Amino acid sequence: MGQSAPPVSLPLLSAGSAASYSLDSLRGKVVYLDFWASWCGPCRLSFPQLEQLRRDLGPRGFEVLAVNVDEFERDAQRFLEEVPVSYPVVRDAAGETPRSYGVPGMPTGFLIDRAGVVRLVHQGYRKSDGASLRSAITELLGEEWSQ
Amino acid sequence: MKYLSCLFVALCLGGCETVEPWERGTLAKPGMQWQTDPMEISLRAQIHASKEASSGGQGAAGGGCGCN
Image (cartoon, rainbow over all chains, first blue to last red; front, top):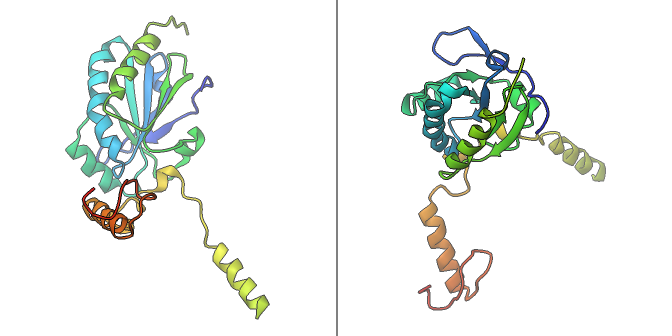
């Protein structure tokens, strides 16, 4: 926390896509970097809430970037069929990114400000977490930022 | 013999591996749990606590009648 977010550049999960997506391309936005897996129960709970947050706060400059760490891509795709989201989902099967972030448990979300600094580490997910996340994001959205 | 058992332990330790939080997909499978049915776990815990006339370790109070 308080340090600049390690780089993330990973392939998008969407079928047959080789295009990679990087955290750098979201500089200037407030980003919730979410590490998730299909076998993680609270992740299933978080997805609809993150989707709603993105829908509400997206126009003000908020984005979610979800990093899937499943061993098998099929598991992740099945999960997304059940809980579809509109935000970008990338995949890191090798585990390099969660290692560089030091993910302490699943799920873990890193709230990154417009300047690319990690401002909040959110571990686990409960139903009531959406409201506190919303206020944290809103606060970061209100901060001044210059290139 | 002593040497052999030491060697055996050393070999076994070589199989130890740290599992990172994001690598626990296989461990999270139902087949990897000690018991898969939460209902059965609580039922067994209650019977054990009452028959042993003891409580503790299972998070249940009382004992003896099997009615708690």
